[in-house]
Image (cartoon, rainbow, N blue to C red; front, side, top):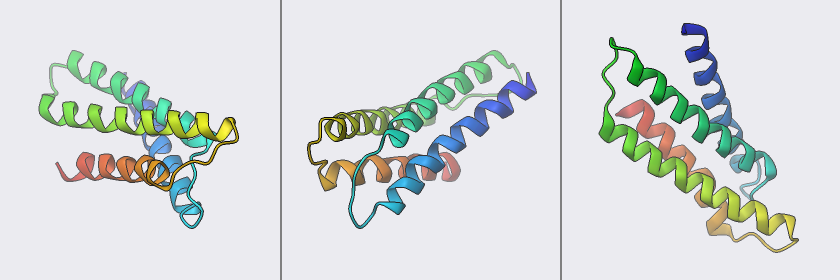
Length: 116
């Protein structure tokens, strides 16, 4: 079970790194990429699976308020990435606010995870 937990943490962190790294790399000409959309799915699913594993572990007390905030942030990243990715696939311009919303919200989610 420890291996599965560690693997899910790795996927979760990798997803955050892809979203934020791509955001920083495209900062001058903001856009949302397919990589960011895929990483937002990976972050959302791995986060939900991590919470599920922790709920079944009697040694871990889950902070439900923190999980609720993180879930809202993860959904925000996913929705912004989905909208931006769909616009990019259609050849439409991705707004600066949408691109920065994707990366910025992922950064806020990481800050909440570490500082709370």
